[in-house]
Image 1: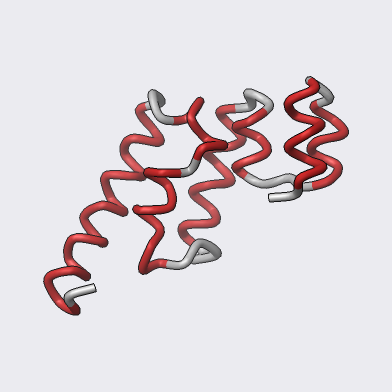
Image 2: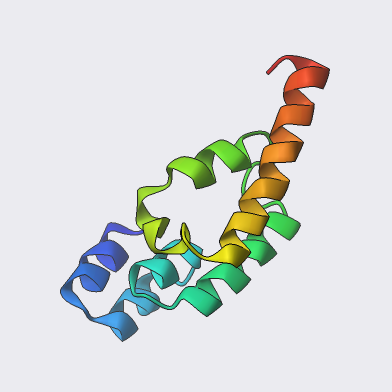
Length: 93
Protein backbone atom coordinates (compact mmCIF):
# COMPACT_ATOMS: atom_id res chain seq x y z
CA UNK A 1 0.00 0.00 0.00
CA UNK A 2 1.27 3.40 -0.93
CA UNK A 3 2.09 5.80 1.90
CA UNK A 4 0.67 8.60 -0.25
CA UNK A 5 -2.61 6.69 -0.62
CA UNK A 6 -2.78 6.21 3.16
CA UNK A 7 -2.11 9.88 3.86
CA UNK A 8 -4.73 11.04 1.36
CA UNK A 9 -7.30 8.58 2.72
CA UNK A 10 -6.68 9.79 6.27
CA UNK A 11 -7.08 13.40 5.08
CA UNK A 12 -10.38 12.45 3.47
CA UNK A 13 -9.21 12.94 -0.11
CA UNK A 14 -10.83 9.81 -1.50
CA UNK A 15 -10.18 10.47 -5.18
CA UNK A 16 -6.54 11.35 -4.55
CA UNK A 17 -6.04 8.24 -2.39
CA UNK A 18 -7.43 5.99 -5.11
CA UNK A 19 -5.30 7.73 -7.74
CA UNK A 20 -2.18 6.55 -5.89
CA UNK A 21 -3.29 2.99 -5.21
CA UNK A 22 -6.67 1.41 -5.86
CA UNK A 23 -6.85 -1.87 -4.01
CA UNK A 24 -8.97 -3.40 -1.27
CA UNK A 25 -6.91 -1.71 1.44
CA UNK A 26 -7.27 1.80 0.07
CA UNK A 27 -10.95 1.26 -0.67
CA UNK A 28 -11.56 0.02 2.88
CA UNK A 29 -9.65 2.92 4.34
CA UNK A 30 -11.84 5.45 2.52
CA UNK A 31 -14.98 3.58 3.54
CA UNK A 32 -15.91 2.04 0.19
CA UNK A 33 -16.76 -1.33 1.73
CA UNK A 34 -18.61 -2.93 -1.20
CA UNK A 35 -15.89 -2.27 -3.75
CA UNK A 36 -13.19 -3.16 -1.23
CA UNK A 37 -14.69 -6.59 -0.59
CA UNK A 38 -15.15 -7.15 -4.32
CA UNK A 39 -11.46 -6.29 -4.93
CA UNK A 40 -10.38 -8.44 -2.01
CA UNK A 41 -12.27 -11.43 -3.38
CA UNK A 42 -10.64 -10.91 -6.79
CA UNK A 43 -7.19 -10.73 -5.21
CA UNK A 44 -7.84 -13.91 -3.25
CA UNK A 45 -9.25 -15.73 -6.30
CA UNK A 46 -6.29 -14.64 -8.44
CA UNK A 47 -3.87 -15.36 -5.58
CA UNK A 48 -2.31 -11.91 -5.57
CA UNK A 49 -2.21 -12.38 -1.81
CA UNK A 50 0.20 -15.18 -0.97
CA UNK A 51 -1.94 -18.26 -0.33
CA UNK A 52 0.17 -19.57 2.53
CA UNK A 53 -0.41 -16.50 4.67
CA UNK A 54 -3.60 -14.96 3.29
CA UNK A 55 -5.59 -15.76 6.43
CA UNK A 56 -2.95 -14.37 8.80
CA UNK A 57 -2.51 -11.21 6.75
CA UNK A 58 -6.24 -10.53 6.53
CA UNK A 59 -6.77 -11.24 10.20
CA UNK A 60 -4.08 -8.74 11.20
CA UNK A 61 -4.32 -6.08 8.48
CA UNK A 62 -4.76 -2.68 10.18
CA UNK A 63 -6.00 -0.86 7.08
CA UNK A 64 -9.11 -3.00 6.64
CA UNK A 65 -10.63 -2.80 10.11
CA UNK A 66 -13.84 -1.39 8.58
CA UNK A 67 -14.31 -4.73 6.81
CA UNK A 68 -14.07 -6.90 9.92
CA UNK A 69 -17.76 -6.61 10.83
CA UNK A 70 -19.06 -7.20 7.31
CA UNK A 71 -20.57 -10.66 6.82
CA UNK A 72 -19.02 -10.98 3.34
CA UNK A 73 -15.57 -10.37 4.80
CA UNK A 74 -16.28 -12.85 7.58
CA UNK A 75 -17.24 -15.47 4.99
CA UNK A 76 -14.02 -14.83 3.01
CA UNK A 77 -11.82 -15.00 6.07
CA UNK A 78 -13.52 -18.20 7.24
CA UNK A 79 -12.71 -19.86 3.90
CA UNK A 80 -9.10 -18.70 4.15
CA UNK A 81 -8.90 -19.91 7.75
CA UNK A 82 -9.95 -23.41 6.68
CA UNK A 83 -7.34 -23.40 3.92
CA UNK A 84 -4.71 -22.23 6.41
CA UNK A 85 -5.64 -24.90 8.96
CA UNK A 86 -5.56 -27.61 6.25
CA UNK A 87 -2.09 -26.44 5.20
CA UNK A 88 -0.95 -26.57 8.81
CA UNK A 89 -2.08 -30.19 9.04
CA UNK A 90 -0.53 -31.11 5.69
CA UNK A 91 2.75 -29.24 5.82
CA UNK A 92 3.19 -28.17 9.42
CA UNK A 93 3.66 -24.55 8.43
